[in-house]
Image (cartoon, rainbow, N blue to C red; front, side, top):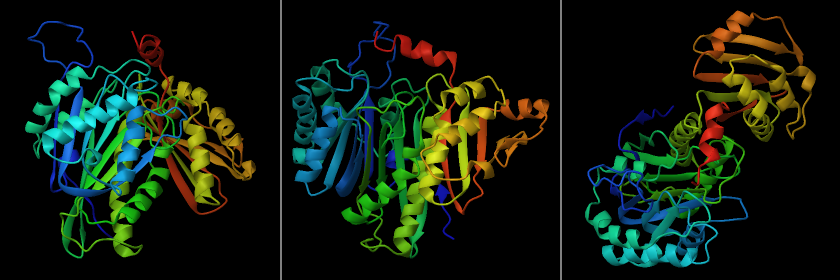
Length: 416
Protein backbone atom coordinates (compact mmCIF):
# COMPACT_ATOMS: atom_id res chain seq x y z
CA UNK A 1 0.00 0.00 0.00
CA UNK A 2 1.24 3.48 -0.90
CA UNK A 3 2.65 5.43 2.04
CA UNK A 4 1.93 9.15 2.32
CA UNK A 5 4.41 11.30 4.19
CA UNK A 6 3.19 14.56 5.71
CA UNK A 7 5.34 17.52 4.71
CA UNK A 8 5.44 21.27 5.31
CA UNK A 9 4.63 23.92 2.73
CA UNK A 10 0.86 24.00 2.34
CA UNK A 11 -0.06 25.64 -0.94
CA UNK A 12 3.66 25.92 -1.82
CA UNK A 13 4.60 22.31 -1.04
CA UNK A 14 4.25 21.18 -4.66
CA UNK A 15 7.08 22.07 -7.04
CA UNK A 16 6.62 25.33 -8.95
CA UNK A 17 4.03 27.02 -6.74
CA UNK A 18 4.73 30.33 -5.00
CA UNK A 19 2.56 32.56 -2.85
CA UNK A 20 2.33 35.83 -0.97
CA UNK A 21 -0.05 37.52 1.43
CA UNK A 22 -0.30 40.94 3.05
CA UNK A 23 -2.59 43.49 4.64
CA UNK A 24 -4.01 45.98 2.15
CA UNK A 25 -6.78 47.66 4.15
CA UNK A 26 -9.98 46.06 2.84
CA UNK A 27 -11.21 46.20 6.40
CA UNK A 28 -10.33 49.29 8.37
CA UNK A 29 -8.28 48.32 11.42
CA UNK A 30 -9.83 48.60 14.87
CA UNK A 31 -6.57 50.15 16.05
CA UNK A 32 -5.47 53.08 13.82
CA UNK A 33 -1.94 53.05 15.24
CA UNK A 34 0.32 52.55 12.18
CA UNK A 35 2.85 50.68 14.33
CA UNK A 36 0.31 47.89 14.98
CA UNK A 37 0.69 44.95 12.58
CA UNK A 38 -2.65 44.06 11.00
CA UNK A 39 -3.77 40.63 9.83
CA UNK A 40 -3.29 39.84 6.15
CA UNK A 41 -6.44 40.30 4.09
CA UNK A 42 -5.30 39.54 0.54
CA UNK A 43 -3.17 36.83 -1.04
CA UNK A 44 -1.91 35.57 -4.37
CA UNK A 45 -0.51 32.22 -5.39
CA UNK A 46 0.75 31.19 -8.80
CA UNK A 47 2.40 28.39 -10.73
CA UNK A 48 5.53 28.65 -12.83
CA UNK A 49 3.66 26.98 -15.71
CA UNK A 50 -0.03 26.69 -16.68
CA UNK A 51 -2.05 24.24 -14.60
CA UNK A 52 -4.90 21.93 -15.42
CA UNK A 53 -7.53 23.14 -13.00
CA UNK A 54 -10.66 21.58 -11.49
CA UNK A 55 -13.27 23.35 -9.40
CA UNK A 56 -16.39 22.70 -7.36
CA UNK A 57 -18.74 25.52 -6.41
CA UNK A 58 -21.46 26.21 -3.83
CA UNK A 59 -24.96 24.94 -4.45
CA UNK A 60 -26.42 28.07 -2.89
CA UNK A 61 -28.57 29.89 -5.47
CA UNK A 62 -26.87 33.10 -4.39
CA UNK A 63 -23.31 32.93 -5.71
CA UNK A 64 -20.55 35.44 -5.04
CA UNK A 65 -19.26 37.39 -8.03
CA UNK A 66 -15.79 35.80 -7.72
CA UNK A 67 -17.29 32.36 -8.34
CA UNK A 68 -19.01 33.57 -11.50
CA UNK A 69 -15.78 35.12 -12.79
CA UNK A 70 -13.65 32.10 -11.89
CA UNK A 71 -16.06 29.73 -13.64
CA UNK A 72 -16.10 31.94 -16.74
CA UNK A 73 -12.31 32.17 -16.82
CA UNK A 74 -11.88 28.41 -16.54
CA UNK A 75 -14.38 27.89 -19.37
CA UNK A 76 -12.63 30.45 -21.56
CA UNK A 77 -9.17 29.11 -20.72
CA UNK A 78 -9.89 25.45 -21.36
CA UNK A 79 -9.77 24.58 -17.64
CA UNK A 80 -6.26 25.94 -17.19
CA UNK A 81 -4.99 28.69 -14.92
CA UNK A 82 -1.76 30.25 -13.68
CA UNK A 83 -2.69 32.32 -10.63
CA UNK A 84 -5.35 32.88 -7.98
CA UNK A 85 -6.02 36.09 -6.06
CA UNK A 86 -8.17 35.93 -2.94
CA UNK A 87 -9.28 38.39 -0.28
CA UNK A 88 -10.96 38.14 3.10
CA UNK A 89 -13.16 40.57 5.09
CA UNK A 90 -15.55 41.18 2.14
CA UNK A 91 -17.36 38.46 0.14
CA UNK A 92 -18.12 40.68 -2.88
CA UNK A 93 -21.56 39.06 -3.03
CA UNK A 94 -24.96 40.59 -3.81
CA UNK A 95 -23.30 43.73 -5.18
CA UNK A 96 -24.34 45.32 -8.49
CA UNK A 97 -20.69 45.94 -9.35
CA UNK A 98 -19.43 42.61 -8.01
CA UNK A 99 -18.50 40.94 -11.30
CA UNK A 100 -16.86 44.13 -12.55
CA UNK A 101 -14.64 44.30 -9.47
CA UNK A 102 -13.82 40.59 -9.49
CA UNK A 103 -12.77 40.94 -13.13
CA UNK A 104 -10.69 43.98 -12.24
CA UNK A 105 -8.84 42.03 -9.57
CA UNK A 106 -7.90 39.46 -12.21
CA UNK A 107 -6.86 42.11 -14.73
CA UNK A 108 -4.62 43.83 -12.19
CA UNK A 109 -2.78 40.59 -11.48
CA UNK A 110 -2.59 39.69 -15.16
CA UNK A 111 -1.11 43.06 -16.08
CA UNK A 112 1.49 42.86 -13.32
CA UNK A 113 2.47 39.27 -14.18
CA UNK A 114 2.24 39.68 -17.95
CA UNK A 115 -0.30 36.89 -18.45
CA UNK A 116 -3.85 36.71 -19.90
CA UNK A 117 -6.60 37.78 -17.49
CA UNK A 118 -8.44 34.50 -18.18
CA UNK A 119 -5.51 32.67 -16.57
CA UNK A 120 -6.20 34.41 -13.25
CA UNK A 121 -8.91 33.10 -10.91
CA UNK A 122 -10.45 35.01 -8.02
CA UNK A 123 -12.05 34.28 -4.65
CA UNK A 124 -13.47 36.38 -1.82
CA UNK A 125 -14.78 35.65 1.66
CA UNK A 126 -16.28 37.77 4.41
CA UNK A 127 -19.36 39.92 4.88
CA UNK A 128 -22.11 39.57 2.25
CA UNK A 129 -23.79 42.61 0.72
CA UNK A 130 -21.15 45.22 1.39
CA UNK A 131 -19.50 46.95 -1.56
CA UNK A 132 -15.93 45.76 -2.07
CA UNK A 133 -13.42 48.63 -2.03
CA UNK A 134 -11.25 47.97 -5.09
CA UNK A 135 -8.70 50.76 -4.54
CA UNK A 136 -6.71 49.05 -1.75
CA UNK A 137 -6.60 45.86 -3.80
CA UNK A 138 -5.31 47.67 -6.89
CA UNK A 139 -2.65 49.34 -4.76
CA UNK A 140 -1.57 46.02 -3.21
CA UNK A 141 -1.24 43.91 -6.38
CA UNK A 142 2.26 45.12 -7.40
CA UNK A 143 3.62 44.21 -3.97
CA UNK A 144 1.76 40.91 -4.01
CA UNK A 145 3.30 39.93 -7.33
CA UNK A 146 6.77 41.21 -6.50
CA UNK A 147 6.77 39.33 -3.20
CA UNK A 148 5.72 35.94 -4.60
CA UNK A 149 7.92 33.29 -2.99
CA UNK A 150 8.07 29.49 -2.85
CA UNK A 151 8.05 29.67 0.96
CA UNK A 152 5.26 32.17 1.68
CA UNK A 153 2.45 29.66 2.09
CA UNK A 154 1.77 30.86 5.65
CA UNK A 155 1.32 34.47 4.51
CA UNK A 156 -1.30 33.29 2.03
CA UNK A 157 -3.05 30.96 4.46
CA UNK A 158 -3.48 33.71 7.06
CA UNK A 159 -4.79 36.17 4.45
CA UNK A 160 -7.97 34.14 3.80
CA UNK A 161 -8.91 33.84 7.48
CA UNK A 162 -12.10 35.53 8.72
CA UNK A 163 -13.32 34.30 12.11
CA UNK A 164 -10.80 31.45 11.89
CA UNK A 165 -8.58 31.27 14.95
CA UNK A 166 -5.81 29.28 13.23
CA UNK A 167 -4.51 28.90 9.67
CA UNK A 168 -5.26 25.61 7.98
CA UNK A 169 -2.64 23.89 5.81
CA UNK A 170 -1.77 20.31 4.86
CA UNK A 171 0.55 18.58 2.39
CA UNK A 172 1.77 15.07 1.52
CA UNK A 173 4.38 13.47 -0.72
CA UNK A 174 3.85 10.17 -2.56
CA UNK A 175 5.36 8.26 -5.49
CA UNK A 176 4.18 7.15 -8.92
CA UNK A 177 6.58 4.66 -10.51
CA UNK A 178 9.36 6.03 -8.34
CA UNK A 179 8.61 9.68 -9.21
CA UNK A 180 8.00 11.84 -6.10
CA UNK A 181 4.79 13.89 -6.35
CA UNK A 182 3.36 16.38 -3.86
CA UNK A 183 -0.09 17.69 -3.02
CA UNK A 184 -0.62 20.64 -0.67
CA UNK A 185 -3.43 22.95 0.24
CA UNK A 186 -4.91 25.60 2.46
CA UNK A 187 -8.44 26.29 3.62
CA UNK A 188 -10.44 28.85 5.52
CA UNK A 189 -13.69 28.54 7.36
CA UNK A 190 -15.14 28.75 10.82
CA UNK A 191 -18.81 29.63 10.39
CA UNK A 192 -21.48 29.49 7.67
CA UNK A 193 -20.37 25.93 6.97
CA UNK A 194 -22.68 23.13 5.88
CA UNK A 195 -22.10 20.03 3.73
CA UNK A 196 -23.64 21.12 0.48
CA UNK A 197 -20.61 21.22 -1.87
CA UNK A 198 -17.32 22.70 -0.93
CA UNK A 199 -17.90 24.47 2.39
CA UNK A 200 -15.58 27.46 2.60
CA UNK A 201 -12.61 28.44 0.43
CA UNK A 202 -10.22 25.61 -0.30
CA UNK A 203 -7.17 25.77 -2.55
CA UNK A 204 -5.13 22.69 -3.43
CA UNK A 205 -2.05 22.43 -5.64
CA UNK A 206 -0.08 19.48 -7.00
CA UNK A 207 2.95 18.96 -9.19
CA UNK A 208 1.54 15.61 -10.33
CA UNK A 209 0.68 15.47 -14.04
CA UNK A 210 -3.06 14.81 -14.29
CA UNK A 211 -5.40 15.54 -17.20
CA UNK A 212 -8.10 18.14 -16.63
CA UNK A 213 -10.84 15.51 -16.93
CA UNK A 214 -9.31 13.13 -14.39
CA UNK A 215 -8.47 16.03 -12.09
CA UNK A 216 -12.13 17.07 -12.05
CA UNK A 217 -13.25 13.49 -11.45
CA UNK A 218 -10.83 13.05 -8.55
CA UNK A 219 -11.90 16.33 -6.98
CA UNK A 220 -15.63 15.66 -7.30
CA UNK A 221 -15.30 12.14 -5.89
CA UNK A 222 -13.16 13.30 -2.96
CA UNK A 223 -15.34 16.31 -2.11
CA UNK A 224 -18.22 13.89 -1.59
CA UNK A 225 -16.45 12.13 1.29
CA UNK A 226 -14.60 15.10 2.81
CA UNK A 227 -15.85 18.68 2.51
CA UNK A 228 -19.41 17.53 1.83
CA UNK A 229 -19.32 15.63 5.11
CA UNK A 230 -18.61 18.76 7.15
CA UNK A 231 -21.04 20.97 9.04
CA UNK A 232 -20.59 23.65 11.67
CA UNK A 233 -23.92 25.46 11.70
CA UNK A 234 -26.10 24.27 8.81
CA UNK A 235 -25.59 27.39 6.67
CA UNK A 236 -24.23 26.88 3.14
CA UNK A 237 -22.10 29.86 2.14
CA UNK A 238 -22.57 31.88 -1.03
CA UNK A 239 -18.83 31.83 -1.75
CA UNK A 240 -17.89 28.19 -1.23
CA UNK A 241 -15.31 26.94 -3.69
CA UNK A 242 -12.60 24.32 -4.08
CA UNK A 243 -9.86 24.82 -6.65
CA UNK A 244 -7.43 22.02 -7.52
CA UNK A 245 -4.47 22.95 -9.75
CA UNK A 246 -1.97 20.51 -11.31
CA UNK A 247 1.14 21.82 -13.08
CA UNK A 248 2.78 18.48 -13.94
CA UNK A 249 6.27 19.58 -12.85
CA UNK A 250 6.88 16.35 -10.92
CA UNK A 251 7.54 14.73 -14.29
CA UNK A 252 5.37 11.62 -13.96
CA UNK A 253 3.49 10.18 -16.92
CA UNK A 254 0.20 12.11 -17.08
CA UNK A 255 -2.75 10.39 -15.44
CA UNK A 256 -5.38 10.39 -18.16
CA UNK A 257 -7.56 7.42 -17.21
CA UNK A 258 -8.65 5.39 -14.22
CA UNK A 259 -6.17 2.84 -12.90
CA UNK A 260 -3.55 2.30 -10.21
CA UNK A 261 -1.93 5.71 -10.64
CA UNK A 262 -5.28 7.49 -10.55
CA UNK A 263 -6.27 5.65 -7.36
CA UNK A 264 -2.94 6.52 -5.74
CA UNK A 265 -3.34 10.18 -6.65
CA UNK A 266 -6.91 10.22 -5.36
CA UNK A 267 -5.84 8.56 -2.11
CA UNK A 268 -3.20 11.26 -1.58
CA UNK A 269 -5.74 13.95 -2.42
CA UNK A 270 -8.08 12.44 0.16
CA UNK A 271 -5.38 12.64 2.83
CA UNK A 272 -4.97 16.39 2.27
CA UNK A 273 -8.67 17.19 1.92
CA UNK A 274 -9.70 15.08 4.93
CA UNK A 275 -7.02 16.76 7.05
CA UNK A 276 -8.25 20.22 6.03
CA UNK A 277 -11.87 19.18 6.62
CA UNK A 278 -10.98 18.06 10.13
CA UNK A 279 -9.20 21.38 10.80
CA UNK A 280 -12.24 23.31 9.59
CA UNK A 281 -14.53 21.36 11.89
CA UNK A 282 -12.28 21.77 14.92
CA UNK A 283 -12.08 25.54 14.37
CA UNK A 284 -15.84 26.02 14.07
CA UNK A 285 -17.03 29.34 15.47
CA UNK A 286 -17.04 29.17 19.25
CA UNK A 287 -16.24 25.45 19.20
CA UNK A 288 -14.62 23.70 22.15
CA UNK A 289 -14.81 20.14 20.77
CA UNK A 290 -14.23 18.42 17.44
CA UNK A 291 -16.99 15.90 16.69
CA UNK A 292 -16.47 12.99 14.32
CA UNK A 293 -19.29 10.61 13.44
CA UNK A 294 -18.28 7.28 11.92
CA UNK A 295 -21.22 5.41 10.44
CA UNK A 296 -20.31 1.80 9.65
CA UNK A 297 -22.25 -1.30 8.67
CA UNK A 298 -24.25 0.57 6.05
CA UNK A 299 -25.75 -1.07 2.94
CA UNK A 300 -24.01 1.50 0.69
CA UNK A 301 -21.80 4.60 0.80
CA UNK A 302 -24.64 7.08 0.29
CA UNK A 303 -26.54 5.67 3.28
CA UNK A 304 -23.43 5.85 5.45
CA UNK A 305 -22.81 9.48 4.43
CA UNK A 306 -26.44 10.48 4.99
CA UNK A 307 -26.57 8.99 8.49
CA UNK A 308 -23.18 10.38 9.57
CA UNK A 309 -24.11 13.87 8.34
CA UNK A 310 -27.51 13.69 10.03
CA UNK A 311 -25.85 13.05 13.40
CA UNK A 312 -23.21 15.76 12.94
CA UNK A 313 -25.85 18.33 11.93
CA UNK A 314 -28.03 17.80 15.03
CA UNK A 315 -28.00 20.99 17.11
CA UNK A 316 -29.34 19.06 20.09
CA UNK A 317 -26.49 16.56 19.92
CA UNK A 318 -23.95 19.37 19.40
CA UNK A 319 -25.28 21.10 22.53
CA UNK A 320 -25.14 17.84 24.50
CA UNK A 321 -21.51 17.33 23.50
CA UNK A 322 -20.71 20.86 24.70
CA UNK A 323 -22.32 19.97 28.03
CA UNK A 324 -20.48 16.61 28.07
CA UNK A 325 -23.83 14.88 28.49
CA UNK A 326 -24.08 11.33 27.10
CA UNK A 327 -27.62 11.97 25.87
CA UNK A 328 -27.53 9.12 23.36
CA UNK A 329 -31.22 9.49 22.51
CA UNK A 330 -30.23 12.51 20.44
CA UNK A 331 -27.92 10.30 18.39
CA UNK A 332 -30.67 7.78 17.67
CA UNK A 333 -33.11 10.59 16.93
CA UNK A 334 -30.75 12.03 14.31
CA UNK A 335 -30.09 8.57 12.85
CA UNK A 336 -33.84 8.00 12.68
CA UNK A 337 -34.69 11.11 10.66
CA UNK A 338 -31.84 10.57 8.21
CA UNK A 339 -33.19 10.36 4.67
CA UNK A 340 -32.04 6.79 4.07
CA UNK A 341 -33.52 3.28 4.10
CA UNK A 342 -32.37 0.91 6.88
CA UNK A 343 -33.68 -1.00 9.90
CA UNK A 344 -33.38 1.17 13.01
CA UNK A 345 -33.83 -1.88 15.27
CA UNK A 346 -30.36 -3.16 14.30
CA UNK A 347 -28.47 0.07 15.11
CA UNK A 348 -25.87 0.40 17.85
CA UNK A 349 -24.13 3.55 19.08
CA UNK A 350 -21.17 4.50 21.25
CA UNK A 351 -19.13 7.53 22.31
CA UNK A 352 -15.33 7.35 22.12
CA UNK A 353 -12.27 9.49 22.77
CA UNK A 354 -8.69 9.04 23.91
CA UNK A 355 -10.19 8.35 27.35
CA UNK A 356 -12.05 5.23 26.25
CA UNK A 357 -15.29 4.03 24.66
CA UNK A 358 -18.73 3.72 26.14
CA UNK A 359 -21.50 1.78 24.37
CA UNK A 360 -24.89 3.43 24.90
CA UNK A 361 -27.22 1.64 22.48
CA UNK A 362 -27.59 -1.80 20.92
CA UNK A 363 -30.30 -3.12 18.59
CA UNK A 364 -31.99 0.28 18.61
CA UNK A 365 -32.40 0.35 22.40
CA UNK A 366 -30.46 1.76 25.29
CA UNK A 367 -28.11 -0.39 27.36
CA UNK A 368 -26.82 0.18 30.89
CA UNK A 369 -23.62 2.23 31.01
CA UNK A 370 -21.58 4.12 33.57
CA UNK A 371 -22.36 7.83 33.59
CA UNK A 372 -18.99 8.36 35.26
CA UNK A 373 -17.18 6.61 32.40
CA UNK A 374 -19.26 8.51 29.85
CA UNK A 375 -18.41 11.84 31.47
CA UNK A 376 -14.72 10.97 31.32
CA UNK A 377 -14.96 10.03 27.62
CA UNK A 378 -16.82 13.24 26.77
CA UNK A 379 -14.36 15.44 28.65
CA UNK A 380 -12.03 15.21 25.65
CA UNK A 381 -11.83 18.00 23.08
CA UNK A 382 -12.12 15.39 20.30
CA UNK A 383 -15.12 13.05 20.44
CA UNK A 384 -16.17 10.22 18.14
CA UNK A 385 -19.79 9.19 17.76
CA UNK A 386 -19.74 5.59 16.52
CA UNK A 387 -22.90 4.42 14.75
CA UNK A 388 -23.10 0.88 13.38
CA UNK A 389 -26.14 0.02 11.25
CA UNK A 390 -25.20 -3.69 11.10
CA UNK A 391 -26.68 -3.88 7.60
CA UNK A 392 -23.72 -3.92 5.21
CA UNK A 393 -20.03 -3.16 4.72
CA UNK A 394 -20.04 0.53 3.72
CA UNK A 395 -18.86 3.28 6.04
CA UNK A 396 -18.38 7.05 6.03
CA UNK A 397 -17.20 9.79 8.38
CA UNK A 398 -18.68 13.23 8.94
CA UNK A 399 -17.06 16.06 10.90
CA UNK A 400 -18.45 18.92 12.97
CA UNK A 401 -18.15 20.64 16.34
CA UNK A 402 -20.11 21.34 19.48
CA UNK A 403 -22.54 24.25 19.83
CA UNK A 404 -21.44 26.74 22.46
CA UNK A 405 -22.49 30.10 23.90
CA UNK A 406 -19.66 31.70 21.98
CA UNK A 407 -21.21 30.80 18.62
CA UNK A 408 -24.10 33.16 19.38
CA UNK A 409 -21.74 35.85 20.64
CA UNK A 410 -19.65 35.73 17.49
CA UNK A 411 -22.60 35.85 15.12
CA UNK A 412 -24.67 38.32 17.09
CA UNK A 413 -22.51 41.21 15.87
CA UNK A 414 -20.54 39.62 12.99
CA UNK A 415 -21.21 42.50 10.57
CA UNK A 416 -20.81 45.40 12.98
